[in-house]
Image (cartoon, rainbow, N blue to C red; front, top):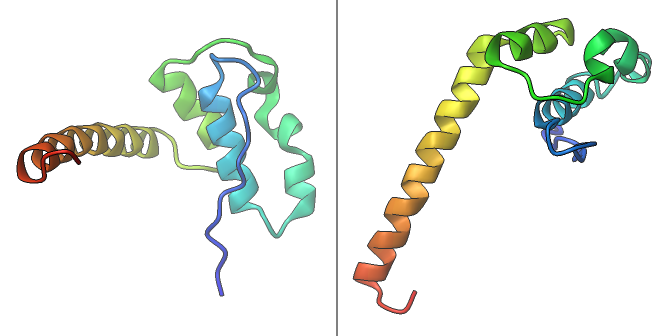
Amino acid sequence: MTDYAVPPISQRTPKLCWEACGRMLSDWRYRDDAGTRARYAQTAGRYARLDTGLVSAQMDKFYRRLGIQGDLMYENVHAWWRESIAWAAFRGVWDAQVQPGV
């Protein structure tokens, strides 16, 4: 059975959501390769030492450096979040109208 669970990793600082996501995805992708996981900081390079937010192009380079698809993944994840937030708002309004008190 395939393990699809992504290991939870906390952000080191509030600005490093991109790094936590990269580390989680890298750990998941290389879950059967302890050597690659152990070399995360080396593979991440200078990105592992940053304490700042990144723009899309920088995130793309970081994710590609880890062997994870870059900009397409970033855009798809953000599109998914936007749709999820919109759907949640719609669902909340729908529930309140159809099932008062929910």
